[in-house]
Structures are given as structure tokens and as C-alpha cells.
Length: 236
Image (cartoon, rainbow, N blue to C red):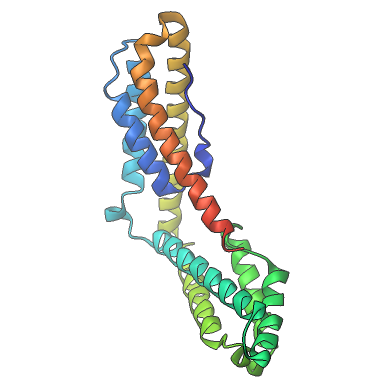
């Protein structure tokens, strides 16, 4: 009997919530008396996590900044895909040549989407500045004016919200979520370790159903993480 592995640190907050929600339901219904105390501690830790990231009580600058970052990522991917396509082929030679100049800058600065928020902001600032240095003639000839304007708007929206995000209230929210996630992750690991240990002592049959259902949840989340990573790489 084997409990599949999962890298909890790779999960986004919403993914961590969904994962722990599913597993806590399993933990709340265990029959093993030896396992119940750890499961109770785990479900308690999940409730703290749920409270910490409850959107109805948190519509804060921190959450809005994360949403703005997602929109910024989408804008960068769209810009990158467009300019690479036009630089690769356009029936208008002048448009193709101008697009090639812009595409060279995207190649220079590479994909910033998976960097830290601060690093991504810096890279996109540098990219925008470098594109603007080419001059309006080049960006308009490449048909890139509206794309650049959208990227700038999304970048500025994120930066504006990120400034608010450093407020004491937002920092407190982020700190509570981080602490609650760490506690839930640790409690989950304790449950897994105990199940594996008890299966050796009491026999696998007693825990087969729990492990089978847990592995379904783990596999589903691992596939979600894999799909997200593949989608992010698709923007390169």
C-alpha cells in the first residue's frame, strides 16, 4: 500500500484550500482510534486555513493584487504570442521586420511569468522601456501599439495594487494565510505518516479505502499542477 506523493509547497492558495478540503473530509470519517487524534488536529488546522483565505472576509489588496498579476500574465502571453507570429511571417515585409525588432526584446528578457512578483515586475518594466525606446514608428509598423498599451495598463494596475498590498492590514492577511497553510500542511504530513505506520502494524486492509480515496485526491491535484505548469511554459 502506497500513498502517492504531492509537493504541497507548489500549490497556490486556492489549490491548497481545495486539496485540504477533500482530505479533511476523509480524515473526519476515519474509524481507527489511533488515527483519530491526528485527524482531529488536521481538520482543525484546515478550519483555520479556511478562515484565513475566506474571500468573503478577505477581499483585500492582497487578493486584488494576485488577480491583477494573473491579468498581467495573460497580457504578456498574448503580446509574446502575437509578436512571435508576426515576426515569423507577415505578408507585409515592413510589418515583419518591425515585429522582428520587438520579438528580439521578448527573447532577450525571456518569460517572466514564473518569476517572483518583484522580479516579474522588474523584467516587464525593462521590456516595456526597451520596446518604447524603439520608437512609435516601429511599434505601430509592427501592429503592436494596442498590445503594448494593454501590457502597460496591466502592469500599472498590478503595481498600484502591490503598493497597497504592503499595508499593515494586507500584510496581516498574508501572514495569517501563510501560517495557516504551514500548519495544515504539517498536520496532513502527520496523518500520512501515521497511516503508513499503522498499516504496517495493523495491516493494510484496515486503511485500504482511506488510502485509495486519498490517492484519487492527490492524483487530481497533481494533474492540476502539471496542467498549470504546462500552460505557463506555453507562454514561452
